[in-house]
Length: 470
Ligand code: ATP
Ligand code: MG
Image 1 (cartoon, rainbow, N blue to C red):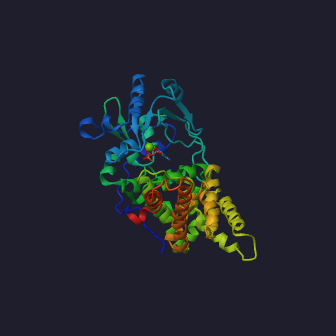
Image 2: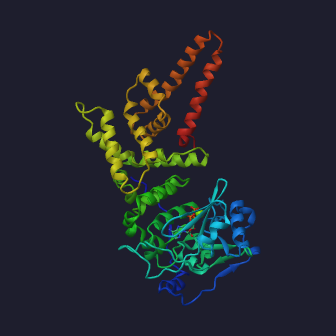
Image 3: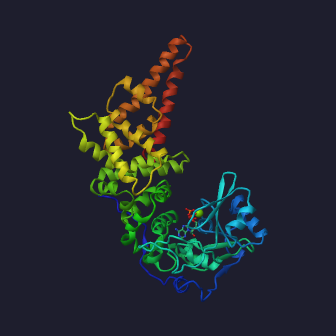
């Protein structure tokens, strides 16, 4: 049975505190009423400057010293209030991009729909946005309601109601260190709820990526989705097809190259979002436990590596996500008297990739190594020392071998085959060391020869099979 875990949803529907005011914003270009925000003074909340990065602080102070309003907002405030370390810091200001640019040595303006400033301090990038204006009927949209042009600036208040979830619309004011809450985010943080601001369905229609964000943020914080925030997702999931494939590539990495990758995968499947991203894989994962197990194992492996601060590669992740259809196509077309397994695998890879990138773009720098990982899988079936030596010198051998181990772990490739390759590496490395010892006569003590391969093997196991040790 396919895992059908999901982020929980709360059954009690309480009125969306943002509804009343947000509706007023939705009425038209002019804001008729201004709501009073809740202000929590510094003494009554835990967000302290010592928890902010020096880059975030410098950005906030630079804007304030130039006479602008500046607030920390989004994940930075939300995560600190929820007791976790923020991943990055986002800042909102009333300064316009052309006023921001001269204030910072390294500032890049990006985006056409709505300009965002990336301010760089060393390795850290701060995302700086000008307050967004209220949603209005005059904004350009496509047939599904997605906003296409969005370049009207606004105030702190209009900005708050343009954010996605109430917990993401909390502002830390650098002028007096208070938290400003227009949308009931503090209450939802206490209740551990992710709640969409405003009319839920139209907010998803404006930007369907918010469905992915709802799942990711709920799983990250171990919060529940408010019932009205969860309800439309399954229905509106097909709107993801309207999102440019390049943006979905980034969003998939955020959600699946993530410590919560397995929970996110299960939630995506539950809400019918995974099928919009990887339709061919999803169909097979629904039908075959082995395909589902393989994807889940690859994701838990990735998550474990991130937890252990080991490098993770989008190529490996995407190779795993698309492996079920590649394998299916390979098996369907392989004939004993037909083209060689290598050729068949090459064709399967091309076909699957061509279909997949219509939904989620994969840059060439990743799709090339993905193909190499796939193409090496049939080559692993030839168990000869001379071929093994050649394969082991391939730059993608390490990743392809790790991939084989995952296949074996779910029973899709024979354990004996994976074992042969594990042994071959030890044996052939040892052989080479023996040969070298011959060259230098008996200079290399036997103990050293033994130690080298054992050490390599231990390291390999912990890199590629963290679950086995969990
Ligand atoms: P994290 O950075 O931890 O992944 P985050 O909530 O900070 O989470 P970002 O992508 O950094 O996510 O966005 C910063 C803030 O910008 C969000 O908290 C939210 O207020 C706003 N935001 C981002 N994406 C959207 C969106 N699609 N619609 C509305 N608001 C958004
Ligand atoms: Mg952020």
